[in-house]
Length: 446
Image 1 (cartoon, rainbow, N blue to C red):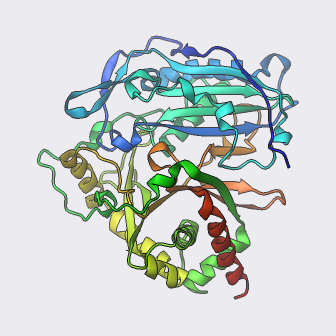
Image 2: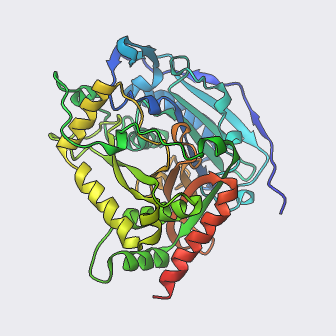
């Protein structure tokens, strides 16, 4: 089948400031916000079908979104500002009200012609204009939104946000507020809270926990040289496949989460596909939301970065040759080590001591982020729920080729499950597909 081709006509990008005057101030960013690896923009895509119940005068999604953006930026006014350089290589937010960047567009394609929608979406560059975002974060808007009307009456809402400002839960909170304003709310039901100073380091920074996820071990496995040859794909795990994998991992009486078992399955299959030497160390590095872990917990409405990273590690030989339960056990142990206040505080202090460098993705490291339960598909801007909502691709710039996203997905048969989107060097993707198929097929015979 020939690849789908369609044309997108964009109007000139415009800056959308808050609808009323907002505080003009400089705001502190925490060391977790200001990690070097977060200084990039991350994309979100939301696909919406037409809604015949929309009133005639209220059916232009671009106009509705732009007006809602003006209103929501009154409450989330730091998003309308710009990053500025601060002493010691840090950033701060200049709340100058300059505005978010907004693009209105039309595409000569129908929603149904786009096929089964799941990340990585091959046409996302057409639906969000990343070329106008500078590599220098101090010269770029913090948020860019493009609303693309489709020929069927549906539309695509695309958002590009700088990760320095918010993690995935934070940007979801912003988008939830935007959806409420689009439907006529006077203010967000959950008011935003800045409070980044809660995550300040100690006066005398002290690292009390081992931080394998941040240990800058330089091991070159050749993946960097192959990054330009990446192949992108996603794999669907339905309820049956997930249950079978869990049964193999923990038996009839044990318990593990869907994240635990899918991460273990993907990590092991990816490692096998890479054909690494048996003694090569492999790491699985994954985010843990510290909002409720840190003592005292972060306040409701906090929309900054609150993620710390845990690390499970072993050798390629052990991971590839041992049962799935071995990888699940490593991941569960890593969670127990990281899900506490001491670990979170150690990460904050470590970044203050070591200069906020990124997590350790050199060598045979791999990461996964689960946004399947965050609710992106449920975001309703007045047209109903999204057909697909979540990450546009299979990795952020800093983790390109080494990151897997788990998103909620309903397949063509109507089954609800999880789609795992990831990238691999092109020659290895087929090998990975075989490994995943084998892993699931073996469990179906148990």
